[in-house]
Amino acid sequence: MIDLRSDTVTVPTLAMRKAMAEAEVGDDVYGEDPTVNQLQEAVAKITGFDEGLLMPSGTMANLSALATHADRGTEVILPEKAHAYENELGGMAAFAGLIPRPIKAPLGVPELEAAEQAIRRSTHHAPPGVILIENTHNAAGGTVVPISVQQKMTALAKREGLPIHLDGARAFNAATALNINIKEVCAGFDSASICLSKGLGAPIGTILLGKSEFISRAHRYRKILGGGMRQSGVVAAAGLIAINQSTELLTHDHKRARYLGERLARINGVDIDLATVQTNMVFVTVPQAQEASNKLRDEGIKVSVMANDCLRFVTHHQVTDDDILTTIEVAQKILGSKT
Image (cartoon, rainbow, N blue to C red; front, side, top):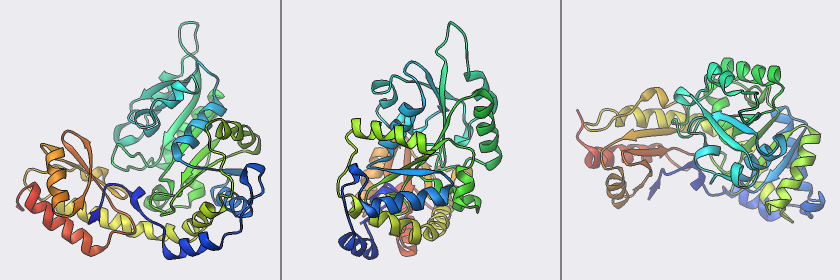
């Protein structure tokens, strides 16, 4: 079975499993797990933040960050279709009392003017609390926020006295696509969440990053949400392998996704906006997406159904060149005929 549903389906490599088995551990709730501490320090160093905090998931990391940054009853200004808005079960409202305010973001890139207009300070509107940017933007097709836009948005936040958070679940993909260092993708943000269990291949874990005082306060929300893990060095050990060995593999994921997108775009009845194929995702518009997904699965290809007319194919390090060729061959048979 070729699994292209998500890069979250990756399983630990042999090197990760060995590191996990041999990890030195302690009680992380007491801050005494040396492997966790090593991972947190390593990710903080390469991203340019003061400190890091290991979280079980990106959802918990984002929610903890927003709750730490903003007061209840304030707004979270974020791109339309952001994961924190669409796919995190309304946690910012249900738990943190925050009000999402999505703004226009073509191809997942937030418009500066829309962000400026969303910042409302009057007796009639909920005040702004925090700005969030997602890079890469999942629902837009794994698209990348240009550095120029990032700089304008972080400058706006600073000018308005607002904290700004990076949902960087796939920030390493963004850095790879832009051919820059991960530190540049994180520059200007007050906090960031960096996932280790997607394209990097670790089994569990997101690192929440920020200044020391911010991380100290975020500890409280991790504990409230049940994220205080004990001997979690077994998890952190895989994360260390991920950041040291897996980042170089992302280039291959991107090349395979681009090739897959270009070949699928030749199929009659299939529509792909190749401008969105910037990293490791290919969004395919087809009639009856669920039916198409079922037929692909019957032929050994798993994909995600994103909407009634949309399928998502995601490449990762466990997908080979041969897998891509097989996927193209099967898709031509299931989705249409080659022109």
